[in-house]
Picture 1 (cartoon, rainbow, N blue to C red):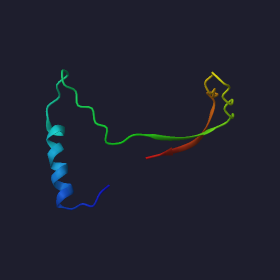
Picture 2: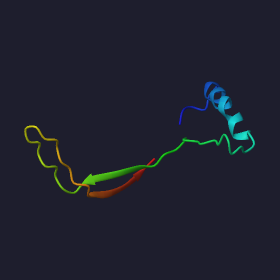
Picture 3: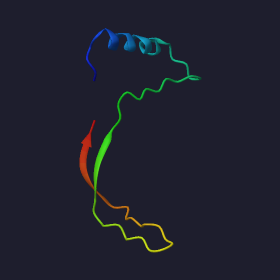
Picture 4: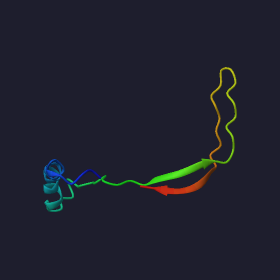
Length: 68
């Protein structure tokens, strides 16, 4: 998050009106102010590319947590 100065507050006020609108199913409000970020690790090495073929990777992964 940025510094809470007058510039930040002015930018925030430009969008807050959207949250005050009444619900309208024809125009839903979808907010993307936060997103999940999953940390994953490879469990199986990829198969090296051969001439004329694409690199092949296994779908398995190791869960290493999440971050914001």
